[in-house]
Image 1 (cartoon, rainbow, N blue to C red):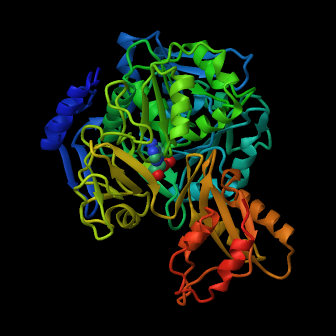
Image 2: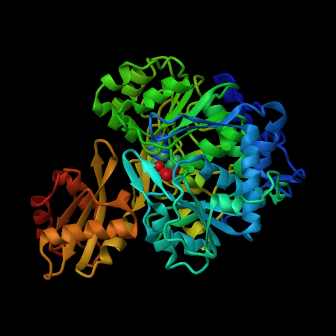
Image 3: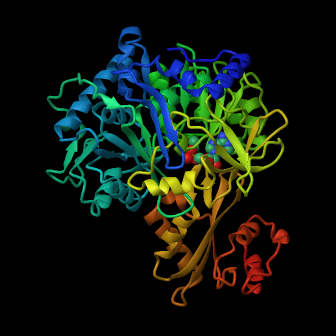
Length: 631
Ligand code: WTA
C-alpha cells in the first residue's frame, strides 16, 4: 500500500481536496486497508461533546494490517531490527513471518491467562522486541494496552494501573540503559502493593532469575507461552473500539489516559508515516524514541509495520558507550530515515564533531525531529554534520492526543526553514486564535494553535473521565480542538511552534505538568508550599525549577534532598527538579494566587522585565527571590 504523495504539487492538490471534501479524501485512503467489514460512513463528529467517530460501522483489526497482509508479499523481510544496548552483542532481525507467529503465540498466552477483549493490560518494559510483540498481541485479541515508560516510579505506575483498572502487567526482570541495570520487576512488585485489579504479571526474563516470585500471580514469558499455538485469529474490532491508552501530563491534576481507537489511528499513523518519511520499500527506518511515548507507538510500531517497513528498535542510549553510538548504528545498518529529538541532537552536538565525523552516513535520506521546538543552531548542526547538507529535515509537530504527525515537511518535497515545522498534513486544518477566541487570519501573528476539523487519530476521550477531555481540549474555543501550544504563520503560510502556553513543561521532550510536580513536593511533611516553573535549558529545552517553602524543622540542605527524593518516588527520576530554591515567601496576589508569570521571568533571568507587580500582596518577596536565584 503506497500512500505517498510524490511532490509538493501533489501535496498541495491533496491538501485542497482534503479540506474541500474530507470524507471523500479519507475514504480514498482508508479503503486501501484491510477491513473485516467495510465501514458505512467515513466520519461523524461533534467537537462540542466531543463525539468523534471515524469509519463508522467498520470492523477491523490493526494487527491484520500490520502482520497478516505482509505474509504473502514480504514474509522474509525484516520487520523489526533490534539493536541491543551492548555494542558487541549482535543485532536481531525478526521477519514479518516470525513476528506474526510471535505475536499470535503471545496473544494465545494472554487469552489463556483470561485476558479478553476490552481488558486493560499495562506494559512496563525495556526497549526489547517483546515490548512491541506484547502491544501487538493485546491488539490482536482486542485487549487495550497501556505502556508506562520504564523511567516512571512505582507510584506513578500504580496511579496509571489503578486509573485503567488493569488486569495484567507485563514486565521484565532487567532493564539495560547504558551501563545501568535495573530490576524493573521489583518496581512492579512495589506498585502492585497498591493495585487490587491486577491478577497476573508476566515477566519477560532476559536473565532468567525468578526474583521475589509471587506464586499464582507471576508467570514467566516462556511459561505463559507453553503449549500455545502460533496462530491466532484476529479479533474483529469496531473501528471505534479502544486500541490503547497512553497517559500524558496536562496543566492540572494527575496524568490523563489519552484514548486511541483501532480504525482511525491505524489510517492516520500509516498515512503520516509514509508521507513524512517518504519510506520506500527496502529502506531501513530508525526512530530512536521509547515505545513508552506516543512517538514509539505511532512511528516505531504501528505506522511502519502497517507500511511493511523495516523498523529499528534500539535498546540503548545515545551516549553509550560513547556519543558516537547513533552514527555508528546508522552506518552499521545503513539507516535511511532517522528520527530523533532535539534534546539528543543538542546533547550530541555538545560532545564535539569528532564523534560524528568518522562514520559513513551516506545511506541517510531523511532526518526527523520531534517532541519540542528545535533551535536554529541544533538544526544547522543536524543538517550539516549528520545530513551532510543532503538530507531534508522534517520537524514534526504533534502530540499524544493527535496520535500522529500534524505539521511537518514531507521528506524532500516541502520547503524547509529552520525552527518552522512547516505545513499541515492533508486533512489537518490548523487555525491560530487570539485570547478572545477570534481566528487570526493574517500571517505573522503569534496566537493559540487550534485544529478545526477532526482527523482520524484525534483523541476520543480521556479514559474514565470524558468530561475532562471536553474541558481540556474542546472547551477553550468553540467547536475546535485546542492544542495548548502557541504558534505563528509566516508570510508563506508555514507554521512555527512557539511552545506550550499552559502549565505544561517539556523537559527533553518529556511532558510534565507543573501542578503534578508541585503535588509530589507538597506530599513531604516538611514542605509548606511549593511552586514549579520551567526555565530555558541549553540541552533539555526546558529544565525544572522548584521554589519551596519548608517548615522550621528542617535545614535547607536536608529539604533540598528530601524534595528531590519525593519527586523521584512519586513520579520518577526524569521529573527531578534541576534547581530547588528554598524560600520563605512566594509572589502572591491579594486573593492568594501565585503569580507564576513572575517566577518564570525570574528563572529565565529576565527579572528586569517583570511588568506590573502592583497587585502583589508583598512586593518585597520578589527581590528576595531574585537575590537567591540559582543558575
Ligand atoms: C511539543 C510528542 C515544537 C509541543 C509527539 C506539544 C513540539 C508537545 C514539536 C506534545 C515540534 C512536539 N516543535 N514543539 N516539532 N513536537 N512538540 O504529547 O509543545 O509528548 O504540545 O507528543 O510537545 O508532547 P507529546
